[in-house]
Length: 134
Length: 246
Image (cartoon, rainbow over all chains, first blue to last red; front, side):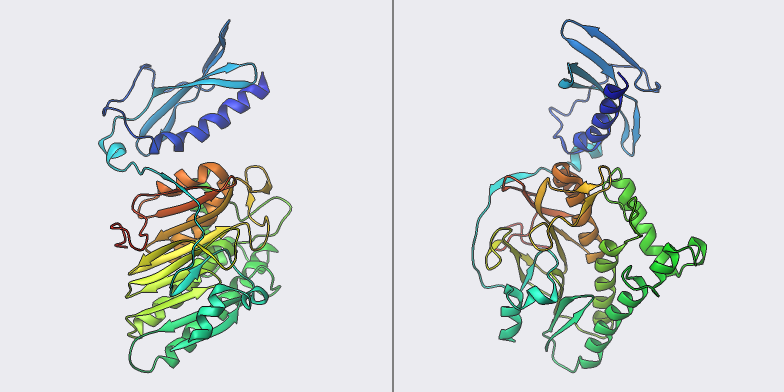
């Protein structure tokens, strides 16, 4: 059980960033739980559908966040937000990531950004070709 | 003017398109980078970083510059839940990931102060671009001679953290193991201090790093994950797209 709890704590820590980018659906927020501060993991219950664990309430700069995780054995079966901030900026500041396919192209460019190349590797690099043009 | 010199073990290319003589300013740029290397390299036994690590200096005795660097390191450690960590167990203090962006940005600021209005400074793949539009290609993770996107930067910085060049060298501080969730993270930000730190930190976080970096105010992101899927922010200034306004 101790191992399960550490997994829960990690999962919750991981979820705090996740909700920040999640587009708000219909502008509503949930507050299924009225509790604001509970020591974590505050409670767990086992039923035929799995173990349900409530996470710690974590204070973020946008307000308190608390999740409930349902385990099926060692695997997370469901995650539910018990508390999330009802803050107008969470909707306005939500960046959305766009999926694309990886393209390979050549183009006329002024400079190249990439992982740090060593001075040895530089000779063969695109940037060296650009620098050689002057 | 176009100059290439090697500092800190990597090539630094400077191109200044302004009329006038910027040779002295360029000397100052390269000089500042060498100075940063001498003061903050963990690979030099007499650097301030090495002396701090050996306990010959206390945190309260470090220079204001190193204090600023260490504060940035701590900020990113907390913001990434420990994934980005310059004090890994069993290793010496290594603030290189922050020092690089920070020192290159400060070097670029010397050029602006000297009156340069249109220049691009590329330090081993990390770019400060001023007075553009400048076309900044992002290296394809699989093909060293190809690009995976082209950005158009007017005033800003571009940094890329990736696994293809020096192998698995970025460690996830939460696990102590190399971060392998992402192949390449490119961040566009107002300064290289921020772009480089955010790119490295997101890389250390792995799969969740893309969304984390995208949520940093003022950061635009282009990420290739280990399965070669690409995600990017809608505001990324891709050349030829309407969003190319950075």
